[in-house]
Length: 270
Image (cartoon, rainbow, N blue to C red; front, side, top):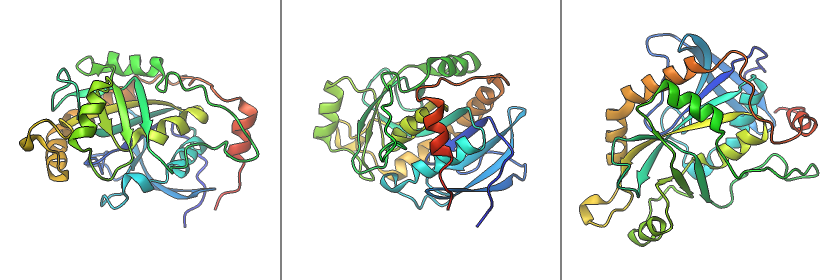
């Protein structure tokens, strides 16, 4: 078990499938944070000329499935370390021909179709209702686009339960509904970050065309991992540039009152 770390890192990165290390040849410091929801282990190093913390979402050996991710522990731990901007990466399937394989898009909207996931810190005696019309803050998205103009701005991401991929019928239905991308992990991450005053930018790496219309288009985990490996250098370069662009005095939006957030952050760790 580690101990609560009190030093602060304003930028955090969550690595999705295929991104399990971030700091290159640098030997990062290990940071264990005790939270009310369990212990979270980060690595801390230099990113874009500033200190940052990093967490591979599924574990370093990809052993945690999307429906069992300890999102409340992860985001609480980040808030306790002073994180103000979260750069979250995700593998996605595309339902939009304008977002082909290899595209890195910045999500601006989200549709939740998960179930049974703990998705709020305010589901007990302390109740607050999160304004979530815009799940991703536009200011940090514009910072990311200014740093990385090659990225595609704006996409609606549908978050499904996983770990299975979609059926062809589901893909057709989602495409007809105007969904651009399909993912398994960005919710409840985005909502929890918003509750605790962390602005999140979601970098979505298109690895496939979801289930596709043809048999040869059907997505597999092997295809996803292979295409993520191809995109990894571009993704890390984008992460570094975005991290470097965050102003030292960046102030995230406040969607839940400070008193309620302080009560959540004052919960006993374990």
